[in-house]
Image (cartoon, rainbow, N blue to C red; front, top):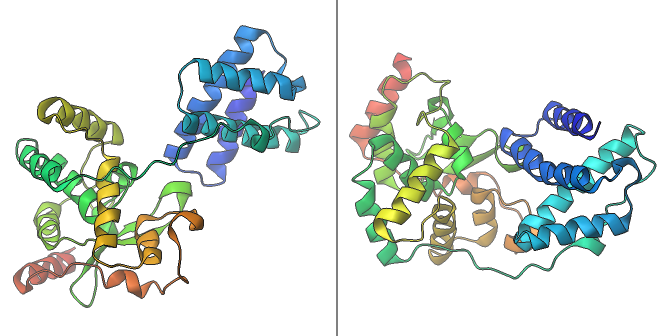
Amino acid sequence: MLRLQVKSYLTELKMKGSSAHTLSNYSYHLDKFISFVESSGLDFTTLTLKQVKQFRNHLVQQGLKPRTINAVLAALKSFYDFLVDEQEVQGNPIITRRLRVKEGQSLPRFMTPEELKIFNRWLKTIPRHMALGYRTMLATGMRVSEVSSVTPNDIIVLDNGGYIFRVRHGKGDKERYVPVIDAGVVNELIDFVGDRRDDEPLFGVTSHAFKWWARKCRLETGVAFHSHRCRHTTGTQLLQRGVFIDKVQDVLGHADISTTRRYAKTAPEAIYELAAKVDEIKERRALYRFWLR
């Protein structure tokens, strides 16, 4: 019964437009709750706050990080909201403010100049499409799930010669536009797109492939690399260049205003100013290919 309700809940999220990444995370989090309920012999329809605390403590004993535990509890609260709406339970026993585990304030783990040198040398040893995928992350701040899902049709050429990506399904299934801030990456992308179909993933790989190569990087270089560090590095470099924090928030697609926004929201055109310009020959080649489509 519980498994069927979870399946119905995930279907409801999908119908509301939740991204595949969100659905995967919620499924993973709720699987932990299912295992706990089944092993403990609990009735999920009469769950009490005390039993929820036992579940939280069980997660702690498993060695999960506070952030992960809080994410599980948030998913569980949303699931019980669904059950209330479906009249499967009378009330929601998940009171997150009384259950949350305190999280330490961690700073973004950007790559140091020395780490970037090592990383860029390593990129020359791996397949071209994977290397360009990572360089695109560094040049845009996009998440690994976003880079793995962009298509040639999502590359937009601006009147001023800049290039931006249209991220159709960002975190929370939100759409945004992201500038490519490295002219070298722009030139590589122009050459790489070639005759690829407009509606197919640009790099032709999944998020898991990027994670696999990230692990290979750690083993071969000794750099504590994971794909999200590209995003941290981009955000840090933009701030170091004097870009206003609210503009950085728009580029990175942060939903939580309190963490990044300190100024009034700028116009979308401000994002375009960050897009790197390409040389005239490369730009003409891109436009030529565009009109041939």
